[in-house]
Image (cartoon, rainbow, N blue to C red; front, top):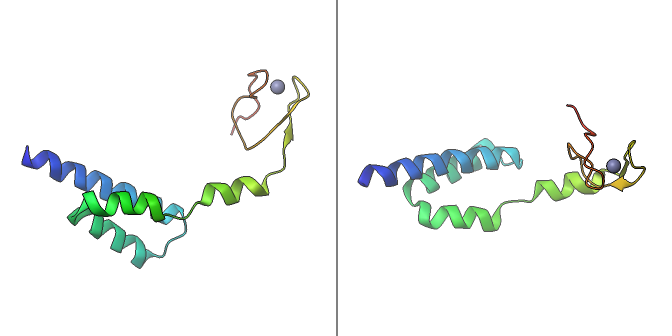
Length: 92
Ligand SMILES: [Zn+2]
């Protein structure tokens, strides 16, 4: 069971590292979070979830509402399916 915790620590550390990169942290800061999570993940993992910068909010506020070609209603963000009529509105 000891190895299970090690595995969880490694997986969480990699996740935190990638998440930090995605949110615009420098390589040094990413590595710091990676190491911290790897060594004491019960402390660093919740800490990262609380303190991580919110990039999604910034991206979302830039996007204007889009018009659905199927039902003619506006929707926010960039979903694959229209939230009003569930038609596919994004293929990329
Ligand atoms: Zn629609």
